[in-house]
Length: 284
Image 1 (cartoon, rainbow, N blue to C red):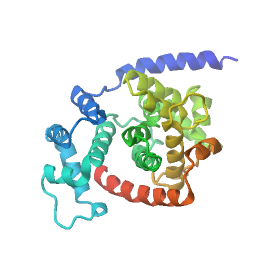
Image 2: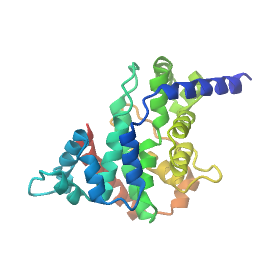
Image 3: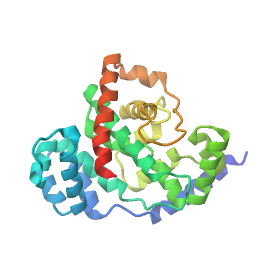
């Protein structure tokens, strides 16, 4: 009977911890806002990137990856952005900003690289699904990238407890949400929403976090079922490289809502693997 009050206490405690997490620096926030602005041109974005050597190097690496099949070597930032196009450039910037924000915590059972591999692959897959549905795909990539961000909050704020969660999951062979609730009385959805509020994420991204395991809740943004299905697809394709990865439960209602056919999904599976492969080589 004491679980609701424990849940509330833990949530309050976590929100205090989140305030101590590294915030996004102003230059990163400005860059993310520019990315969401449809009026921002490739030239404007390139100007911002030029000030960040790390992102510049990654863009050049991506432009020269085998996926883009360029015969002559791309050597300048302008060549890279022109070749990759605005969507790919924006997505790589998003990945670079968020993957650099969380320091590795002292939690031996948590695989940070597998976490980001899964997040990036889900972002790619969510964008491809949203394209197939003719939805706004900029938000889909961001929502896919951040759907599991609550795991990072928990592992950063409570590394020892989260290690116990992962031990419990392995021992009981259960889903992660069950293990989180059993050990911590909160889960990574709670934590993700707390961070999303703190960092002023859009309603679409918040709903994708809220609904990525339960997209059948009322009044969720249309991106929630997209990210739910993308998450399941990426687990099925085993792109994180994580051992003992367990498939999440799939909502039949979300699957039916998207209404995509077999040929659509075959194309999405193949393209997800190829695009993720190019980004994976670039980021890690």
